[in-house]
Every structure is written in structure tokens, then in C-alpha cells.
Length: 143
Image: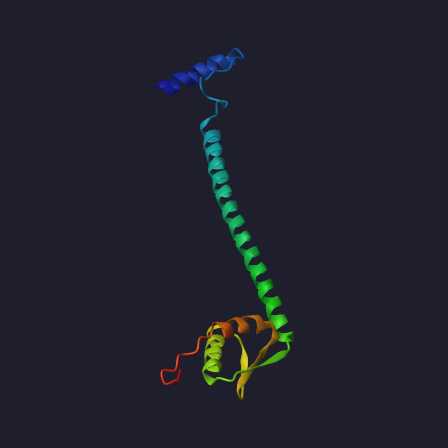
């Protein structure tokens, strides 16, 4: 009944060129269709905002992947163009250790007698591996 009474008041006010004042309401009075349309627009705005945030995240993810692939591509090009260097060892034990580490790190190399050839680009990593080698103590060694 209150809704009909409010509509009746609104008609009377409109007849005299007045508008109904709604307290604590910052929007103009809307009829049902306008209100539903406004609610739908607000839902669409929220949905669009959420989706655009997701799209921004996807865009950042794609930019990160492109940057990563560019770095990897540069590494592959430099690896391809890197000359081969020889590494020789007096100890078979040390050669086996270094070869095993190169396999573990997926560093390409070619075996040769008493050593191997690896690309110059990996020289720093190979030198670190060589320094990490600790020979096994020989219990039969004379002191």
C-alpha cells in the first residue's frame, strides 16, 4: 500500500511542478525499468573491472614470458656462436666428477682422451666445478 501512496504523492507533486525529496538518497527517483537498467549497468561495470584486472595480470604474465624467452634466445645464440675450448685432466676421477656435473647441469660437451671439449661460454662454470672437486683420500698412501 505504501508504494501506491508514494506514487500518488509523486503524481500530486509533479502536478504542481515539485519533486519528491528522498532523504539519505543521492540518486534521482527512478522508475522500475530505469532502476533495473542501472543495477544491470553496475553489475556489468563490476564484472568489467574484474575482467580487466585479470587481463592486466595476463598481460604482465605474457610480458614476463616474452622477456624470459628473449633472454633464453640470446643465450642460445651466444652458445651457438661460442668456440670450443679443451679441458684436460691428469686424474680420471676428476674428469668423471666434472663430466657428471656437466651432465647434471645440462652443459654440452664432447669427450676426448684425457678430457673433453666444451664451449667457451661455459668456462666459468666449469672452472667452479673443477674447484669443487675433492679427491678421495687413498688409505694405502704412505705418509
